[in-house]
Picture (cartoon, helix red, strand yellow):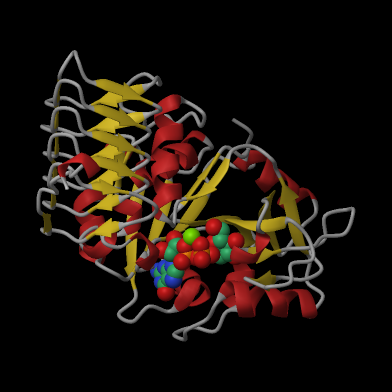
Length: 364
Ligand code: GDD
Ligand code: MG
């Protein structure tokens, strides 16, 4: 471990509502959704810890109490975790400013700030080193994506200086985007973000720093990167962790085609592939096929059902022969036999879709 990142303090932004992941996030905040067998954040925390982070301030708002229940004082994760909760969400910038009050490091120390919905293989120590060697105000991890319009578009000069920050612009000028992991000089948080106000770090703080001539640095890295903010990305992230495409110290078991958690029952005649995870007490019956999907705790996939790239919520039941592709089934919902659901369909918690009799033309 390089000295520059060990003993680093971090702020984790976890106050968003996760609206694009409804109905999963109606009850569980996005950063706590079970992902490859553990709450999503466990992967980010284990990674931060592996780079020497020992103290993390959680910037919470939506359902803050659930984070305390899941992570407590952090000792179970080899970390000290403290919580700073916004009564009303203060936006990404306001949340960083509010959380910074709980930091213990000196004004010139680097502080790691992370969006709480990112899976990334990038080298945090190298990002911190780049930040310190250039004495930057803030250093942004940047990555290249095909469609930058959904993210913060970040053009840079050849020596890495950020020249603009264009949040969710319909006219992106580069494929380089903000990957949601920053190193701030601590004093910059206090001087650039007003306290107690709703502030967007992307729409206000970064553009203002750039305009004022502060050194905002881009740290470009092309290793694995994913924002799990949509159902299909969430399913992909979980599958990639199980498959080992992104190595996570928090994965509860060996990487492979599937991960079956303790207490689950999977028939030897069921087929699990593509990084599927089967939750505690869940059941997958003979002849069922589950590919690249998340089967949550206590869910049942009955015989002959086919589940592809989907999330099956806790206690949900997929009846014999039902087919799901790219679907989210809420907790305790039931999908009757014969239903074939596709293309981003979402079934709300507790809803029952009755059996759907399949009629062939010869019957009519
Ligand atoms: N505490 C707190 N308070 N946290 C918040 C708030 C708030 O008011 N609003 C959002 N967050 C947290 C979310 O929980 C999430 O972890 C993070 O801030 C980013 O919010 P998202 O809602 O996921 O934003 P996004 O994905 O649309 O865009 C952001 O991430 C992209 C990379 O994935 C931006 O930072 C983009 O510039 C970036 O490209
Ligand atoms: Mg996001």
